[in-house]
Length: 448
Image (tube, rainbow, N blue to C red; front, side, top):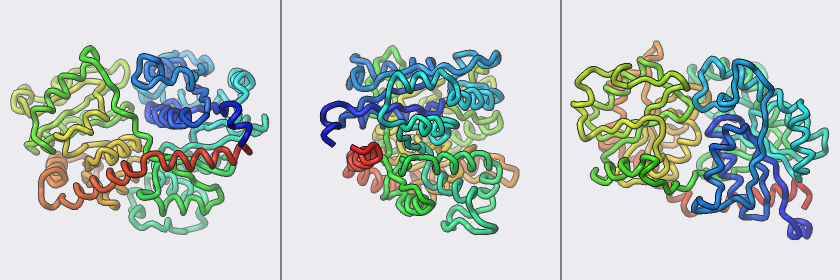
């Protein structure tokens, strides 16, 4: 411990190349930087450029002296130019190529040189990293896995890859046929989770907290590695000026009554199909609720929403009660606004954490990856409700409208709204308790 007081502890961080993963790692880096850790934040140039404004001295909290960006250059692949070295805006067909390029970095001299230059005391790597644990171990550097997905989904993945015969997952809320099919379809991910869970040095970090995920944390710990929650890691609302296009959103919300509006967003890397977009549009209209809908498209596939799915009279019918925003909106700031009464979400884990931190109930429209498990958790824990699809997997506007009204307005949603506020208060009371525990665990792993 004396050595820890003499100098900062050097930590090299390497998140997966998705916005939600980078954001989670960055928030953890910020927390640790206040506790005598110097962070070397390693990612591709396009992602490094996206986070630099959040670290500079012009930001409300400057981290320029404690979080140091380190560029990771992926191997050259003709169909994957540097601006595609991120999941954000990546055309879906290039996703396997990006994964392949990222997984090659752990064996390349490029990353080895980074490690030798930084000389970290510890490496914190994404659970979706490939060769990094092996490289770190060969250099005798302690390395710890960080899972930015939900603990329930992580537990289900590890269980699926390690179970014997027909052994059931011990939590019946996740034992539906649909979720089992999801696990079968993601068997490669299950094996990856298990492999890098097992290679982590003594502990695994997870983005959650015991009051929400305690039983899943304990179950995951039973496989051998101690699972340590780091808290929700929700970014503070960014102070933005009108040139970044947010003032008109907040001014519009200021005119709405308390809890009268739903926020609709499906993350930075999840793109509903044309049929889903149409059902969402008309489900919002039929609900008669105010709404803000953030619409995104993959890089190079931008189109006008009204040309893609809306009839000529749609925008006129929603008039002042609906706002459609392209590409970006200040999500944390919107969710904290008093007029927001519900969040129509894909249930990416980062969005789930932001929603419950703000005390806003979730209207769940899961699409892929761990999202169906996260949506089921929202229902089981009573801070949200899922919009059920039909037997063919199609979204139905009537179902969406019904769930929106029930969660935000109807008497049947009282319990969901109350539970959402209760969880928010728990998070507020805890403050940084989880991070203080994490620091002690990291020091033990390093041997300080």
